[in-house]
Length: 403
Image (cartoon, rainbow, N blue to C red; front, side, top):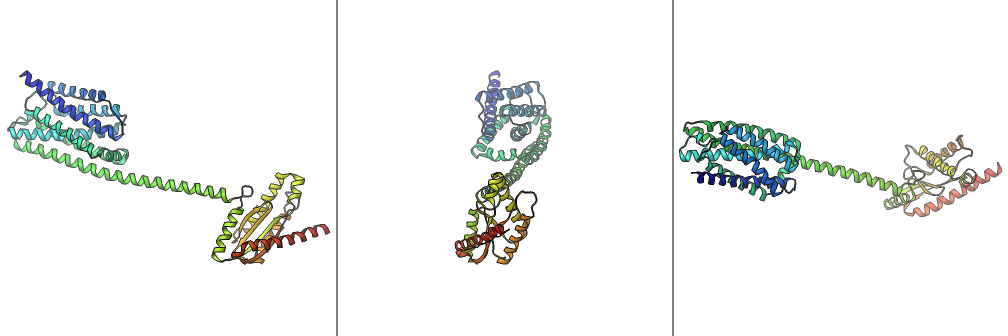
């Protein structure tokens, strides 16, 4: 008799070890972590020792499975460094499936053998060994199948999504509580077929609800996962756009004045030429820059250029005109809507503002040449506008000499 009991204990220990080992391997795949054989064996030893103690003390099954949950959750937490919510969510998944299978086979064997349910309660009995052994072997096989089907990768998405995880956890708690109530039936000494069949039905129902909750939680988690990915892509695209705008600004902005530079002017003129547009072009030269550099230093000369560019921008505000720094002390204005007279009036306003500026020790002004023509020959337009600007400048210096 002692030999038979020892053989039953060993068989149940082997079945539980296989089940525990496969569950730990399954959990390890969720975070791509390896758990040593020593850790897996110690975890098995701790829980199985509790099973043996509970059997010898003949504690109610409810107490047995509740302590099992507490121990397994702590093992998950310390073995994988999961937070407690994830640890107990995984533990409940393991225990609910294990408990449902256990209830199913205890009830099923009690029907086959026509024995009362209390023969399969938490006591030292020959009969309960068979459903326990079968139950643990079925659970070990289940986790092997889940690992083969890469279910852990899907479960990982759900565990990382807090809303789905909380919903799933509460569903597990209710299923677990339902199965614990079902365990109270194993204290019945009556050979009642109705209670036995209810045990089978309740275990199948629990598994069904668990599967539905997992499927729902996985779909919600997947939806949230793709929404987060879409949000990340959107942020990434916005960042790329900002980076592109920064590069654009660096490539096509004059660093001193902040105006668009000559590279962008060439690009715009080529675009206008492609459209066959007529444009009005003004070639502008800052008067007296060399004098300011020589008398007050190049820092003051830079301030002069900046002041001219700000004045040009101020006058052009709200008007369809683009301003570019052509190079050195030269600027270019282009417009595809304004005529020569309009541009000339704007530039005269600029000269008036520069001459009225009392914050500098010199009188600022610009010379300019304005021309309208077909942009397909923009090189010719620039040359003609430059020539007109030169004539304007000659008149400016002649007038200055006479005064």
